[in-house]
Image (cartoon, rainbow over the protein chains, first blue to last red):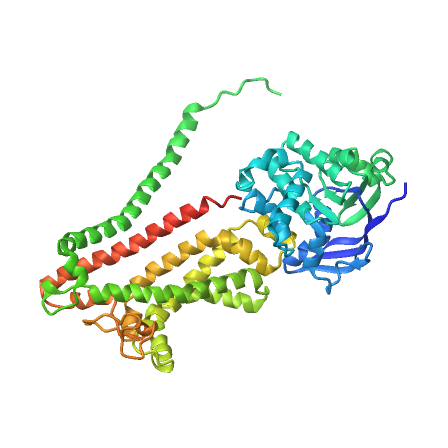
Length: 256
Length: 311
């Protein structure tokens, strides 16, 4: 199977102040595939994910110190200072750990991604909002109450609303930062199913601390430890025949 | 290993708990006592004023100018002055304070300059109000040539409450969860879009509360207003828009001489006649009522607006 490359992490170094959080991380991200980042707490998996949409730029003291993330097909290194982080976030959207709908209506939550892109045409926004909510498998539950507050939905519905918000702008990559860690098993299952459907259209990068989840939904798995990329490979290979002893120890539960 | 079942010394445990509990009882009593000192003092003052002043309250009291005869004197010029000065204060302080607070939270680079500014904003809130009066006398009254006017008084009080509004704005913004903040940026919003669409709408209840608390402080301020030269006896109202000497404008009243409620009270309490005491009590009652009404409004608005903000 021939896979095309969506992004390339190359020798990426990242610092929180004096703390060297990512050390020469290199990893490919394949288009329309689910790539899972796993590893124990503090290994840098969320830090790496948040490099992809330049979230670190919001806080002082964070520093991209070398290497980069090259986005294909235009070969833009999105970490270069002259690349506007807003442009990066318009291409790569994100779903957070805890559902974070804005205290606005369900409709406005999804429409916001379109409004920041300057979209003003009401019927066009209506169509895109509906498509995004359908894409997030939420339409049947909310179609009659789009004007209600997003916070009135259940946790799993809120997370799907956030996925709809991330989907509305038709991004190239969606980042998921432990999207199910605040949800119950049933809501988790529906989000996992959704992630697997979404890869038909979009490239997915997901951080998870749940190894079964990584095994269930991802095509590729990257195991990180103490800021280093220990192993990257096809998920089945990483879980069944890991190349590194460290990966095996983590996956089999001897460590972590 | 001993297989003996341990028998608890229940009597002993209970005695220890009883002794420890004494401190709870002691502190409950101390707390109630401390609370009462504050509350009872206020209630006593307010009741005393109400008993003396309320019988004096009638329509004429609100519609009459001050007079040499206590029975005919009223607070018309004082309450109109207070309302107009407060309007100027709010119009000046709210935009400035909110803009400064938003800048410090969302835009300011985190460096030593910002740190120094932050520390000094809290210090500014502690500067005695008469110092603001002196500053305003030099700056607004003479340098800018606003004179001893409603405009000067309003701007002076605006300076006085600016730190309160800045601090309230910053606290309201900080109460917005990081996840919401990051969510807005993650959608591709610029800082201004984040501020306009998220930060300001979600922090409005907190900002309003701060504004009204600041206004409630300003409404009772006397010293800075006297310093810039409010009149203590004034028997006319500021000219209504377009009614003054030609060329009459919309904002002539801004430059009118004025008095305010606390100054009217101060004037009456310094008179020897007992009847003026009653007037002062009546005016004081109205002033406290205005303050409480503003605080009540703050609580209500916060409650109403927060209903639509859930994280």
